[in-house]
Length: 244
Image (cartoon, rainbow, N blue to C red; front, side, top):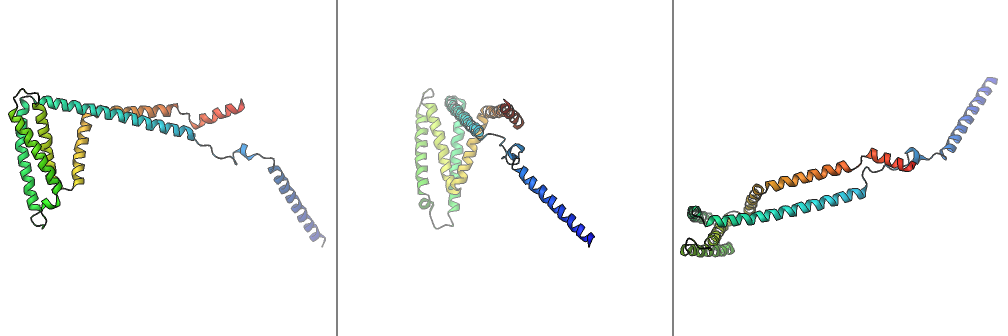
């Protein structure tokens, strides 16, 4: 009995000591500042939101400015190319090209109308009924083309209007080829083909401006990343400010 009472008394003493340690620990927790330790503080963002927003706005403004400048340069080059084409159309070399274009135009128009006839042979509808607007535009283009061609034949070789008339004749001749093709091919693929052709020509004419634009963007990004402080440096600066 004595041994049992002694063991029970020892267990009670150990429980009392453990409860005292727990109470003392809870009392010390009240005086601990977890924000200094880092447990209760929120993680600081690596980049300030205001700095990120201002950098994004600057990048957008820079891209818009460079694009606007590139468009202006491209428009200037298009005008220069048109002027050179007009000057070339007055030369004797352009006469052979112009005559070859006439033959190619007549051949393509005849081929397109033959394909249209075969395409609508099995259909009950006439192409004049389903594509009346395209045929009207085609007649207008052919009329302007024929009028310009007649005026070219009447004008003397040294006339100042000869280059402009040849240019009008070429433009409306191309339109006269495009319009019958729209009856066979749907407008969207035709538009994409023309757009891709224009983009290829633009890239070939403006590849220097495009490369300069890419280099400017790369240099600006490198400058921004070099000037931006790293997270460790920003933390050291904050600690130095706190000590001061």
